[in-house]
Amino acid sequence: ILFKNSLKDTIKFKDIDVFFIQNLSAKALRIMIEKATLYEINFFLQTFKDEISKYVILKNDYVYSLKFASENCIFDFKTFLEWSQMKYGIMHNYITSLNSLISNAFKHYFGEPGIPSDLKGLYYVSHKIGIIYRDILNWAIEANSLIVDDELIELKNIYSLLPEKIIQELEEYPNREQKRLDEVNERIKQGEKDLKITATLKLEISPDFINKYDLIINKLKKKKGLS
Image (cartoon, rainbow, N blue to C red; front, side):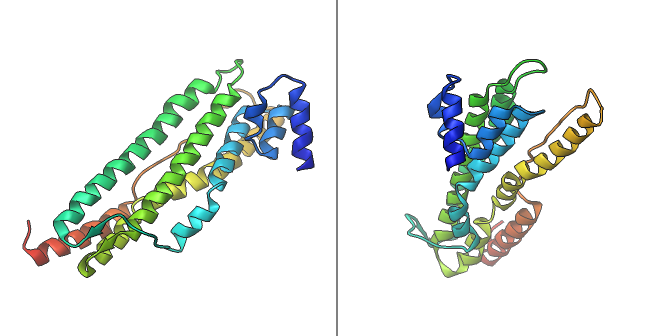
């Protein structure tokens, strides 16, 4: 805490937005002040990690399949399918927004070679990714809390795992890319030049989930004589 406060005091003398720095971790502040090689992408990865870590307690609710009050009770297969389509539409919005943050917002705020990046803009991207990560966890917890007829329990339990691969990718991305960045930084120290850094955030629904879900759906359809 003392270290972070001293960093904040140092930044104040540089006329940097105090409101902005109050939301940064000590590690992110250090990166911003020291401005070592590749500091801008390091700053982004650190804030990405920081924003995801804010929801570790909520993640535990997801991991341990805690169930809470549900606004919905579903007792027939047709209504479940309608509900699941609505929930899928919400998840699609989350994925679309995440892709826009990485493909558009990050690209806008991350400077071209020789041009300083907008660190406040990069923090905006990280912060919004953290918010969507939180909402995806809540999506899964709400799905798992749904009250259904006994024959729909297995289907509901599987459906709540739809975002599992997306959650995993958001958690692993900053650490994975930091490791790659450290390797690039080491090569720069050894004298290599014109190194190109590329990073991919792959957000997709697990094929394993799709197979399990389709299997249960088809079993229920056959039981009910549906095509």
